[in-house]
Length: 102
Image (tube, rainbow, N blue to C red):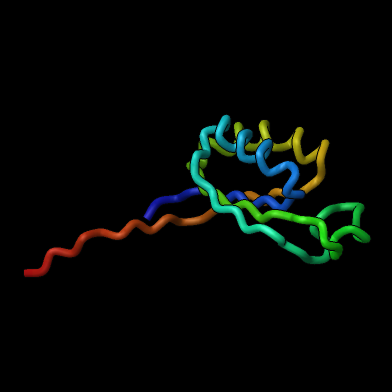
């Protein structure tokens, strides 16, 4: 096991390309995208839009702890300009180890 950072982003799908580019520029090259995310309180100040048919996406990615600063520096301007939210938390990556039987 080793420590990683989990990056979770909820944003409008129109900004998906820009968000993925900014993650890539920060050194985060893998991600998963879940489309058509709906809920309440996803975007600050736009409560009336949260539960409409807007196409929101949920992006999850993992990176080494040393990449958090570049991730934040690249994502913050996008989220401030276009809206959306990002959470970065601690996680553990578990890699399978081949067992040798005796």
